[in-house]
Image (cartoon, rainbow, N blue to C red; front, side, top):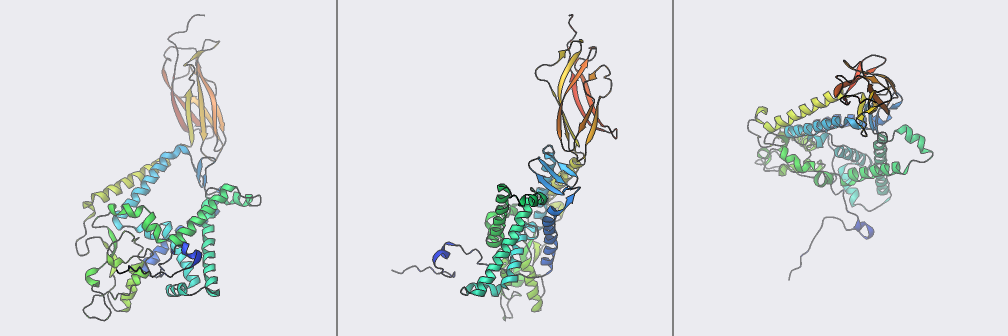
Length: 463
């Protein structure tokens, strides 16, 4: 009876190291080229925006602040409140259908050029190459026994990863807990919740970008699963020209242009061979294109053996956009959501007003034989300036008196006031529709209106 022998290319470890999975079996080789330059032009501004924004202030306040305690979102002088949820809805819809439109046009460009997982992974790879050397040096170091140089380089690498992860954690928390407040509270001790979230984002970044890397893209990210249903035969993807490249070889004159250098696999951050065809794990970063173009240039062959091309139309005419109804539908919903969001932003209220009628009684009659309607008036100043409002009745309502005509609202504050409408003339007033008009006392501009009705009996009973 023959025994089944299982062999493994992984080195054998002893003791506690057997319990630790070797996440970094794929050593990525960094390359350069036009698409990598485009990726850097995309990612560096995004990184600068991410890390610099928490340090910026506007009129003494953080420029961007997600204030959960006060239930407000500040962008410079603009403040969004829970009442502006519809604006967030349109913004999310525009972002989603914008992504769908780009995905159907050019595949996973978001993943390869702007996704935080990709951006931070390439940052960690750059630190790894600076400290430990090129891909071949790192692989040789993996096979070496532990010594002073290996320990120092590995320790410095992980220290740099942890430093960048800590900076990332502090930056993300700073959007909710401003750096000025964080610095002021540092001497007395940061709150436990602040420490929790800083360490959470630090550990999350360290594990995802340092160890999990491509496993996030291939196993954890849902976008790679449903992106394929948003593409058609004209979607531009990273494509290997099989007709031109095969059969692979180095010296055979009958061989194709591919010299089988395997460089396209070495530079791939998700460890796939694009020559095997379009795959779920491909994030369309273009690294394999730049690597292959550099080899083709060295061997005197035409570039674009690997390139961005339509999925199934390498040698066919590309379908016109007008004949791609799903693409047009995605684009139309994106533009509609974007326009509705802009309209909501431009026309959003600066003053929130609501009027609640007294539920205990529809109306009452006071000692002067006047019919009274009691309300609770709620006001919300959504601006960063104190406002003084004047209240009046619009159109013909001279016979109705208001219990209060002026309100002073501090910036970003909510108030509620009792409000009574009274009248001794019942003719034509019963169930009359009224419009309460709020004007800015300084400018005289009408900034809000409320509709209500005046309830009264058919006639006043004799006393």
